Length: 220
Image 1 (cartoon, rainbow, N blue to C red):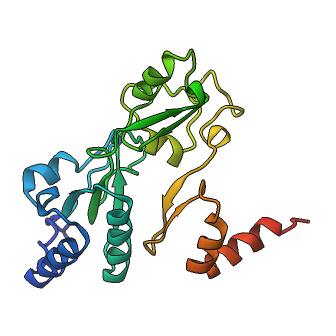
Image 2: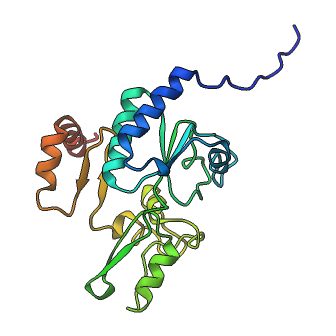
Image 3: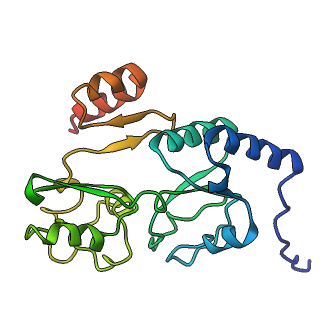
């Protein structure tokens, strides 16, 4: 037997492109924030890892509602979806071959609260930018990753980042008071809301039951 020559993956069928276009049009209010152009797709085909995955479309979302709609639509269509902010992942988490959702371009704001004791940052803000806002109060974030100038709050939380100085006491999860998150079904929950538990129960009863059961399991 002779070794076969690797071939490039076949391009998406026209009907697949049309289905993707309809999904994106239904989920994103401004078509200028959606691109399927090759240069833009190639530019985000890799993060800081050695992996190369060219997405079929790149979407610069502007709201949690759009993220939720895309998640629900992608799940229904059987399409992979990847969230990307700073793109500093060393393990390929910020690249994918389906829909790539940019949560950096429109997500760089922050609200400093209680004289710097708390900060409510958006996922596209870098750690250094967040610390610059806190510096005037003589404070900083607990996590201190080496790539603070490039890594963003979204990745910081997703990876439960720490750093050489903060240890486990001041890592991302231990210093987080509340979180606004989007589930694959499209449900958006803000844990700071007084009715967060009730909202999750009403919209995701099975998920909440499973999470509650797991949290009460006792390992012999």
